[in-house]
Amino acid sequence: MSYIGRFAPSPTGPLHAGSLVAALASWLDARAHGGRWLVRIEDVDTPRCVPGAAEEISRQLEALGLAADEPPTWQSANGARYDAALARLVAEGRAYPCACTRQDIAAHWAAAGVARERHGELVYPGTCRPENGGLRGRAPRAWRFRLPDDARVDWHDRRLGAQHQDVARAVGDFVLKRADGLWAYQLAVVADDAAQAITDVVRGEDLADNTPRQILLQRALGLPTPRYLHVPLVLGADGQKLSKQTGAAPIDLGDPHAALRAAAQALGLGPLAPRDAIGAWRSRWCSQ
Ligand code: GLU
Image (cartoon, rainbow, N blue to C red):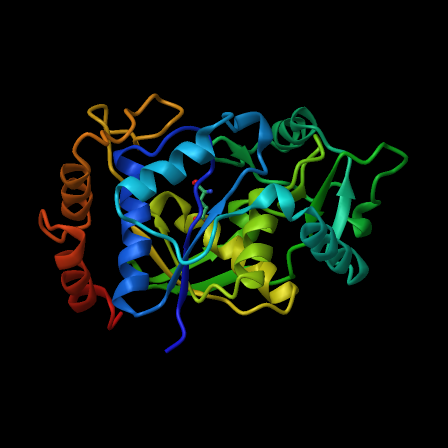
């Protein structure tokens, strides 16, 4: 079978126990399928990137024995690819410029007397849609994806099973290129997964609710939808997702095996070394 998987860290800090779980899961899935495993540095959100973090992540992966089949690629080198994707969406009426600030969107919902907020993100009410009058003389700030009339997405996750989201209710027309000129994660990830012929996305469960947006973009761009498997998050003592932003400790490379065994255990495989974990992973996940 042809299988291409990837680990796509944002270089906002070194790998920690949580991001190692995502790295190990995608590596195990690729190895268990006899496939290829790629590393893509997702450095489009430049204000969040930490200088030297990508190199550090590469060093950590190497020390952990998680070797990629090709040198890592960097999203910051792929601007022309994202430009082409946006140009196609614009040409087909699937993307439009938006002048709204966050305050404008909040004011819209306040005036309507409803709270349309989800994970701190306001649902976009479609103010700048061409059929609603477009920019009306205001300066364009961001580019948004124009959702199809029916934006309900049914999709399958290899671990979570049947999933459903109405993207119109969940987020509305979402941003493709931000007001600060930076590419949005959704567009970059879809364009790159397709360009790298990724067949299987294995990543943390916090991204599961982004998947319907990515599927709608794939459909609009005529791109295939990969298989998805979202793995459990590692929670800190406070019950929150471990993250670089909240200062999760970097992996202790003094004892790479202990780090890998802990990650395998978080994946429900038992405290196995990676070589033994491949078989355990195969019997658990490869028929899903
Ligand atoms: N760059 C994202 C992160 O580090 C992961 C994106 C993905 O796997 O699709 O959280």
